[in-house]
Image (cartoon, rainbow, N blue to C red; front, side, top):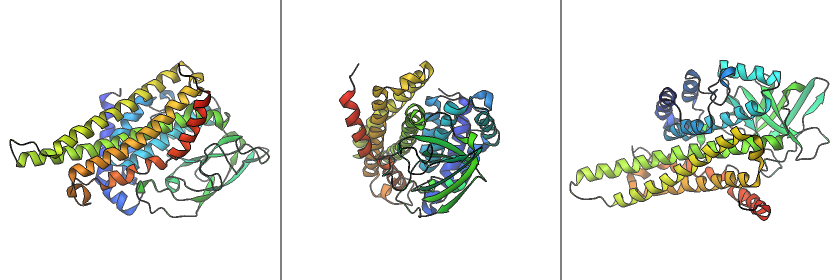
Length: 383
């Protein structure tokens, strides 16, 4: 687990994120103060190697930072998680290439923020399918993509973009391209006035970019997705949701304790429900941490272990269950706090937590993941 200094740095960022969380949610604006604090605490390079200027953190420590941020502001935590996912892709699949090694050092030194461009008009939300293709002529590449959403794209220092390997390639033959600020333009095509996760600022864009051929990661995107993007996404997202659920339960617990002080010698009706929701939170926390620790072990053992059907099922099941648990827990916390939780101007308000929680099942649709699992289970044999 992370050392006390690292946790103190994360807590300082979380305190700033909490200060502006209501405003960020209300105005659907980028949490610039919290992101500036992450940069000041040198936390944007958390997943990068120490020799490149990063912190060299494993999955468990990344989850803990995300959980603490999620208790303060789910949008800030999700931006942090998304950035670390992109950073992990660069570290695990590009670090041996001089261009990407130099970029990683620059990212850590300057605390640069990287966003992802995986969604695309016409693919039905399928991560493993692209319509756009990178075009390479000599040493020059160009790329145009109609993205349905790019989280914090207008605030990012770089983009990692999925696309077909070449114009003649099939939809599933994908690569990942790094485009730095000044090498891409974004033309907004939609708004971002949403139920929750409003601070992630994720409208659609037409993205046009150019660069050099060396900016294409050498590994096929199929390998990057299976061995890095999917496990990091499902685990770090779950850490964010765990933080959101934790703060909701803390507010419910504080509400019941306040009621108990008003009627000494009696147990408030909500105390039973607090015991119930605390048990659910414990199950969620144990599940997220167990999978994070296993992922760390497998990554240390070798990437082959990350490509098994069993591992894919475990990652998918974590995403499904954690996304369901966060909504259930926040809903129960709202019931405990009653009207005090329903009011947006109350210190016991659960409204933002519950609205943010409902995004979890939609980030890669749970129905799509269930369909994938159904196919995988036809060939998987339990150990």
